[in-house]
Amino acid sequence: MIVMKFGGTSVGDARSIRAAVGIVRSRLERRPVVVVSAMAGVTDALIAAWERASRGRGAGGSIAARHLAAARDLGLPLQDVRGEARGMEAALAAVRGRRGSSAADRDRIVSFGERLSAHLVAGALHSAGVEAAAAPAGDAGLVTDAAFGEAEPLPEAYPALRRGLRRRPGVPVVTGFIGRTRDGRPTTLGRGGSDYTAAILAAALGAEEVEIWTDVSGVMSADPRVAPEARTIERLSFAEAAELAYFGAKVLHPKTLLPAMAAEIPVRVLNTGDPAHPGTLITRAATRSRGVVKAIASKKHIIVVDVVSTRMLLAHGFLARLFQVVADRGVVVDLVSTSEVSVSMTVDRGDRLREAVREIRRFAQVRINRDRAVVCVVGEGLGQVPGLAGKVFSTLGREGINVEMISQGASKLNISFVVRGDQADGAVRALHRRFFRARAGGLFGAGRLTAPRTPAEPRDRAARDVCAGAPR
Ligand code: ASP
Ligand code: MG
Image (cartoon, rainbow, N blue to C red; front, side):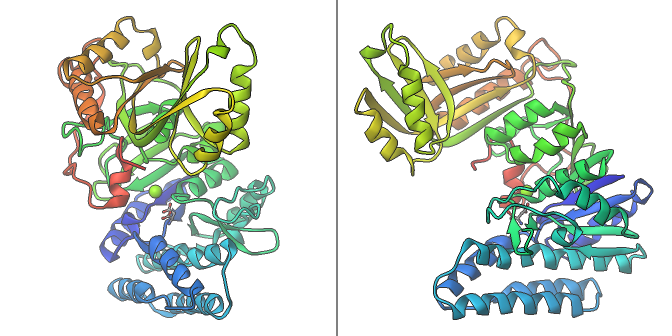
């Protein structure tokens, strides 16, 4: 049994849906459960429609028309799409009629994106001779808490999904991204949450593998817009993939990996437009075939907070106090580096910072540096290679790029550092050249790379997000 998840561009029009159907048919003997995202752009359009409705204006606009056009292109009967579209319009009308609106309303409206695409994909499978039916994840057993917009599955969801999906004949086409509360209200799992759904289903069903079908050929060694010679990485460990996901590569939501990681189910990232390409295989085991560096990622718009206090000298409890303030204000810290009298930390959202800083200023000096970037060199085992950090920093030095902060975690699978935001692309380019081109197959060069067979230029935002280093 495998779980096959198709992202927004993979179900973005009739042509892509036909390609997806062909891919599912090629794997029928592996008993696929299919998970779908909304058509590319539809979730954004639904959120916009909800916002308009909560100000008393507008309707679903072109959303229904787009799905009807795809259904016609695919030669499908229109009643399922029409039924969902009516549901969507009714939900919008209810919001319009009331004053104000809630996150629960938003999730209800947004859930129609995946409900609509599941009908298109199930219909297309059916008309290609494959027994298939759309299955809203909530109906199939995906019960969540009531944290609308970032809901988490409840423990009972796993056995419920097992019961709910095992009984279904043919190929279930499950809605990604959405679940529902115990009392039946639709929830969403957070943006990009369809991958999460796929991993949850795989863990629930004890799948052999999760296939993430997208529109680039796997995880790249860098963002190809920044480093044009970037290549697909053949294999990654879960830890490396999580690190990359966190530091900019949106190929998989970091949270996405957790259920698959816990159940040790391999995840493959594949290209709907080039199904023969091997893509990237993510497993528990680290591979160090030829090169230790797997990828260079970066995350821009980072804020560095420098905290200086002479009182920290030989004192205890300073860090505890500092991080207590940070935790109390809900500020998420990524990198931390300390010296005897100072602490630097990076945060990627400034909205909660102001209050925390006001508080910290009561016991230390604070300096804020905006528009910084974290650049991250990722590879399992790179902490054990003598001279590697030297290569990283001498490469940057030659480019005239100043490093403002350095952090190498205990897991030793990344070296992360902070540079000025406008120097991040230059840093990624120079490091990619240093580790991937100059010494292919050498001690530091990553050997196991696959040249892309399709142009590296991603088609749209969803595709760009897949590349290492894409801004979040
Ligand atoms: N449609 C949802 C989103 O755009 C979930 C997904 O595509 O994974 O965030
Ligand atoms: Mg996605």
